[in-house]
Amino acid sequence: MSATAIALQPYVKLDDAECEARIVAAREQLGDRVVILGHHYQREEVFRHADYSGDSLKLSRLAASSNAEFIVFCGVHFMAEVADILSRPDQVSILPDMAAGCSMADMANLAKVERAWRELSEVLDPDEQITPVTYINSAADLKAFCGRHGGIVCTSTNARHVLEWAFGRREKVLFFPDQHLGRNTGYGMGIPLEEMVEWDFDQPMGGLTPEQIRKARIILWKGFCSVHQMFRPEHIDAFRAKYPEGKVISHPECSFEVCRKSDYVGSTEYIIRTIAESAPGTRWLVGTELNLVNRLHERHKAEGKQVHFMSPMVCMCSTMFRIDPQHLAWTLENLVEGQVVNRIQVPEAEAEQARIALERMLEVSP
Ligand code: 13P
Ligand code: SF4
Image 1 (tube, protein in one colour):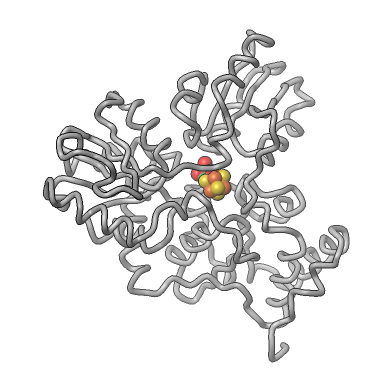
Image 2: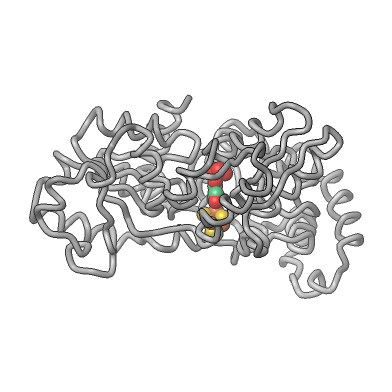
């Protein structure tokens, strides 16, 4: 065991092949003391080292049920926070690169959400009339906000179940930070577009009139995912013109127009399953992150399935991409030396309230 952590700098210069060998060797030494969780958007050189892969919901369940001493999260910051909140206090959650954030999660913060709550209270009684629902793509303090205000967390897999739960308690929902997941899910439940208003967090009163707020069923935070907003309805039109028999599948973080034009809409886990279960020879246009789409293309080409990426531009999640073999090797070799680097630790008071909102979600999830 070394007294101080091994520095990152020398690892940055290692090539991927060298990292690969060192990751495998470190994992062998650590055995079941470590579990590596990998989100579907991870690059191949990292993804192949994951003991378990999944979407946000599946990975939170895996984190909650893991026995490993160290949970190395190959994903983004909010996911490692959820792993810390749901795991036992003696387990350690690690994010190999601290710069792996989520630009959508950053579009909401506690000060702005608390301001929205205060402003809404000028028109109605939020704690009686509004259930706050945060997408799992959000910081732990926002999950804690939901925990203490009778709210809940959702993922793209369970958003409908969560909204049904929310409406079972109060008449309205404040949904943050992703307007698209909120709108697409609400519309799928039969809520008309005019009853879903956009809360512009840079405007006083969200840019809304008291009348608009009173009439709304869902108040949608004006956040979005910069990756999924790249997909456009024109991309679907061009695909359909060329391949009329082709099928279109999109993630619900895509715009309303893209989701309306798609044959199927669902989380990354749903997209993977739907393509896997389709008939040999099916052609797909997929609106989600490039690393996953490339993997699906490789996985299914032998069955004659054609998997196309929706945008003509390369749109990867640049923060997911921050997790590279160099950071993973550095993290694991430090663990071998008895050093924890890049620990993600949510303060217990905050974790306790966030856990309430997460556990509500896990209870209502299919
Ligand atoms: P999933 O829950 O579908 O994995 O989505 C997470 C995410 O960040 C998609 O951009
Ligand atoms: Fe966040 Fe979008 Fe990346 Fe998902 S794809 S982690 S929502 S920036």
